[in-house]
Image (cartoon, rainbow, N blue to C red; front, top):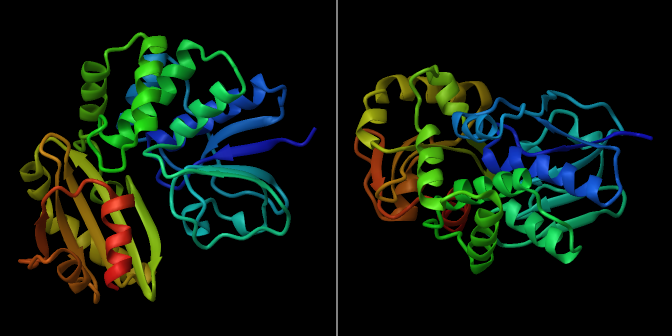
Length: 307
């Protein structure tokens, strides 16, 4: 039986990894034993915290797929965010909570997209709809993904569905959402072992905003000032990426998980789009975006509207 690969986006976050693993489990509980969760990028420290908590291994790394390979995409649909070779893959399913863009298939498929705060919330509802038992491991994976994507339910992307799912999953997982969640989020703010290039690529998404070729990268922190100490090196790294990839705007968001603000470093010939979109003035290429924490809801749509 031909194997089906399940994976999230490049530079995977906790939702991408956990939802891939959960989708494989969900398939198996539905009697489909030919799918395999993989990853198309390195694990970040937040996700590493979750996997260590569960004493489980990360999915296998896949950097390129063969023509005709059957795949299921989770937590993304844009080809620019997917694995090399995706254009020639056979996409048989998508589970996502982002905008639909740059996406087409040659055959019909199962496509589930809901405007929730997290892909794992959609998978939770799938478990419930099929009356399938959720075990502790699956509950921890899904709860962790929801905590990550909604910043402990503080993000404006959070919906009532995410809140209900997290409340129920936390009971099965036997975790205290606040203490476990804060420890998990703080684990993801440790950048000490990463190079500048790695920091810029930890959670970077390339998107087309009308005719503006854009990368929006984001890191979480408990102290914006600590990350800003690396500003000179970060700007040099950003300019290298701009030159290498022909990027018009690189927006690097340093998101304070405690106070729910983001400091942006914006470079590229279209950096002024940040000023136009948020009514701020970039001083030395940077500005504070008060209340901005969500790239999906508060950055990409706003930039698109003002481009």
